[in-house]
Image (cartoon, rainbow, N blue to C red):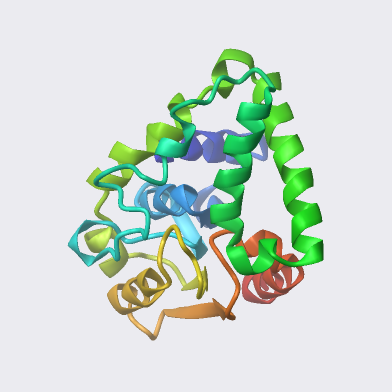
Length: 219
């Protein structure tokens, strides 16, 4: 996926006829996208990097609370039919509850947001047709198990890295943020910690704060 992203970047740079140092990008990756972002830094010139709720992989990784070894977190999609049924809605609700976090979903606003997200999730997967099945989600499991970004993070070439993570992330534990900071070095990286109650989807539950941090960082 990193090579695909790099191809898109080069196509964009070519369309603007950019040369040399002009062909430099700011890169942001969330969750699985954070792994792609790490690999992308080895393929193109990058100014600043944002890594959200992701992992360095390898032996340095703090394993998810829903362990990859038994696929518990991903198994929720085993019975996904992609037919818009109540069963699919139940599966989507269970998945989104895990990534949004119990604290957020138990509030009145959170319950409303969860309901809306479930409806949109089911609808969007149906619109994708055969591409909206469970295969893509479940395929993340082997990718997570085989990724090791230790050497990438130790030698990352950019001005600065901002690591964003919710302290109550029940999918990729908060400890991964500190591990990545230590691998990169504190002189070049910093961690933005979203307070108690912020889960894996902190960028949804703390959307305003997330945008503010990103805007300040990329200036």
